[in-house]
Image (tube, rainbow, N blue to C red; front, side, top):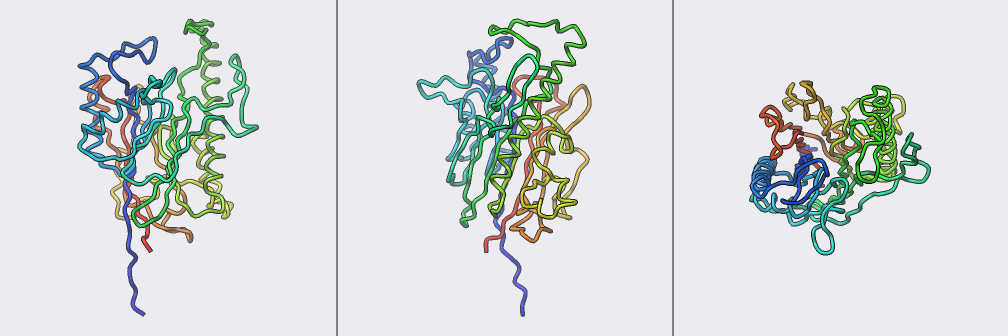
Length: 337
């Protein structure tokens, strides 16, 4: 019997932390100056050029204050994305963009069957944070888009931005400090608050992943700024990749690091980092996939062909027009029959 090789459809996905993408002349953080018109134009130019280079079918974006600014970047990129959404950062009246913290969004040239933003943790997954009280909601709600490939296959895409490692000091409603930030022991407690908040968000996100994957065969891509590396405790709370080693049934609800799932022909470069902190490179921006994209899985529907890191700009010096994160893009494939 003659072997007929399968036909594949390709899917380019990319994640981009855009470093406070906001409209001009509007204050987004009290301690930062608003963008002037000139600064805004430079940021739109820079970002649109990166979007053009990525040329992804699905863009997962973080740190967006104004949906209008994201749409301006896309318009200037020369690419066509019929669907652009940043829930919580809309600029159509009466909305005036994100308030308090930036939001995550998505842009895609694929058909979107469903869009859902997760605000609250599942019941029972809140934690008590010292000095702050119960933490029961995502600071930056994850965004789920269910997109449809041209051949009809659905794919879930979940955009995330977890709590940063930046110490969470207590302050009043006006942003004035309520504790001595020069006290090193206070600093320890402030870092613990951030860890507890990120851990709670990771656990809540894990529940969302389980609900999306359990007993289904719809592929899932989870991407964004995890604010920790792929093998950290908080990232693995979301992915649970290690459970697969001793529990085969865990594959159904596990996530796999796309970079580690690349095909043998992929060029795995030693420049796989997306952020530089105090001179040390790290991977904070990640793309994880469900077992449907794992070529060796018996439930495989495709594979990961390549993962690229767009990070040269991290060595060009600090400038608000550029992001302080590298962008990550994965080339995925799905069988069409």
